[in-house]
Image (cartoon, rainbow, N blue to C red):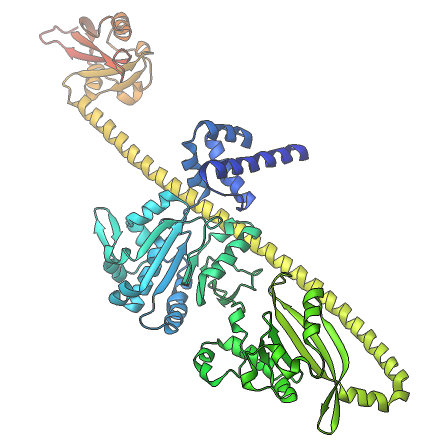
Length: 625
């Protein structure tokens, strides 16, 4: 295929995906193209279609093809406790920690995304019921299980499974959570009602929120990198602060470490990386009446505030509304800021105009959207003069130029520097030389740093390529599992049909042998397809010697040439039943009178004859030859 042909085929393929999205609401545009093309090509082969344009025409005319196509694309390969080691770790390590951090009455919310036919949703239900007990499980647990495949969801709601599907469940749990109904096992209703099934498209629909555990195993690997990133951002929003994300063995999140960090990379269990909130911007030294609010600040926020508070450089934070919200120890000591000053309007404080006019400078920073530095600001303290470099820096949220959080005002004490500068004017050249050497060293370090960054980027690219390859292999493995399951089903059906054919043949042979006369069955070409034992006894020829041979070619005592015309009339429907008597010689060489009865052998359609049954009976009281 030339480049132009390949481009045209890719264009038609994208048009096919867009048509599916517009007509049926399934958005596959975020799926990996290699996987999609393999799955769709499989459906095309079943209709002997060799290009995507022809298949697009076909589904436009045959809308019933959509359901078969979706079932092919959405590979529903799953089972109870798939990857047993990962589920064991979840039960023994992850779930106990999650439950320990919650009050005894708090609700536990779980989302099984891409649940297919429900095995993983019921697996987590079993684990939580085992840990909490039935009473606590029914009172506290809500499990939401979603998929885009309605057929798989209907199967999940029925909760009916074949015995082989439960092979990885211990016998004790099988008896506790399942009841046998006919040849199937059904998940018990008192546990099943805690699992809520519904349709959810990860690409288009909003996620379920306030989750303690999110299970999405071997689903992300079907999406391209950009779609994976969008879905993972929604997952990050959906999880509680200490919530866990349980992925499949092909999904490692190497390129999404800013959203999730591993609890167990081996078992693909992650927790979210929390984002800083505006409400976290609070001074560690808040008024005494705010102790309850302080206790709700996370350890991570307190750690950041402690680092800010112990910085040797004096620093204060003024929010966008003009209120003083933070001041570290150095700033409170240098400018005599009291605890009661936190939360007041900055313009009402002495610091706003002394040692320099800061209010107008803050307005300039907001207007120009860049930092301002004022050097050698004089601050008189007791009997000494202090020199400060004051820097005012705008604070933005997530790089949004239109969203200002406030400003940071830093006071760098450069008094010692000024004193040294005045004292060592004669050493300026030496300092310049040292500065040049330092600059040269910095440049060398910068060069080394850039080389390290380049190497790191190459490693990240390699890791992403390896992850993508691993996901592709896992996808192909699931496709093979699905195909093997289809072959096993077909083999089982073929075995049953073979048994039925064997039984029918045995039944037919039994009927033929039950006749007390010789029986020959011939097809329309006079070839013998049946020859019973009485015929052996009559003419001295075994059935295996005449099978599939022409009756007209046999050298036996029966005058077959006299039977040609009667048999032909049976074939043509002129006479369906005839009886004639012919002179013959049996296997012992005796001359006999043989009564021959011919009966047309009808097919499923009454007017069609595809053979003739010949009954041969030796008449008694005949002389010997």
